Image 1 (cartoon, helix red, strand yellow):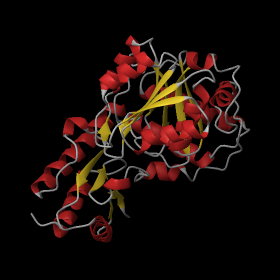
Image 2: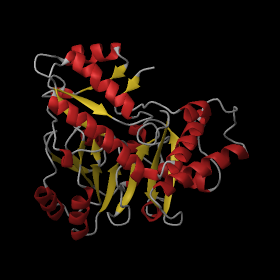
Image 3: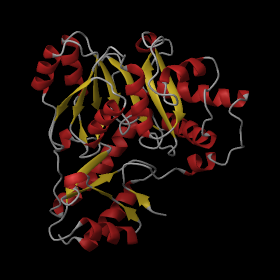
Length: 361
């Protein structure tokens, strides 16, 4: 079996994989309602959120579908969203806004740059019509963990503007202070830090953020969060859900809880990626970002001198390890390693040994 060191899908535990074999189920039956409600409650429990104030809306789709549902459903027709870009996924938020003709303004950064807080403050002061700020927490383009707190503090000072957070690659492993950071909604997926399978995604939304949208014309049919929320609050679902991936997510959430929650998962990831960084540095494989700039979930590294990505990837795959290429203009200069999923220190030590066969100290 290959050890996946890419940023999702992840290596599954045996119990999550076995959950896919549970009985077939009709999405209009009471058993499905019980499953859906349990998942929704468990997602809120990951960060200790109140069911009265918050709701988890679950649906069949990839992480991008959650991003699209969040942006299209929660930015009002008369509103304007400021989108912060410093990687592929921030730029994807902008693509979503453009496709749906959502009024927006962009603060663009190079992919390896941290967010310029002064520019953000200036834009918010100039554009008084901005209703939301959209930001990626963990930008897996480089592995940068954006400082949501700094962004939230600036937004609070400027008309208490709410955040729309892409936490696709951080929910379940990085800190999210929903109330303190004035988060209106947070988009994520099952097959990253939660260790489920691809096919189910979700948006955790502040219920108050949906009230003003109830009478607003929908921009999409399938990804209308308001319709999903109303249906799921009434023990229904508007469309057919992927039952087997729901089973897997339910099992994965139970597993996360039993393993001590997101803080323990963060510690595990950090321990594994620290081991990778230490060993890589000894091989003169340089990290692209400092440790305090990086997420525990994924780090990026410059390719070893004289070795291109294809060679590194193909040789490691022969030993059962899947790494991930850089994106866009960075794909020729670096590669990425993630420690998500059901992998352990022994797996990482074997991975390091495989790297040492290719890259000589």
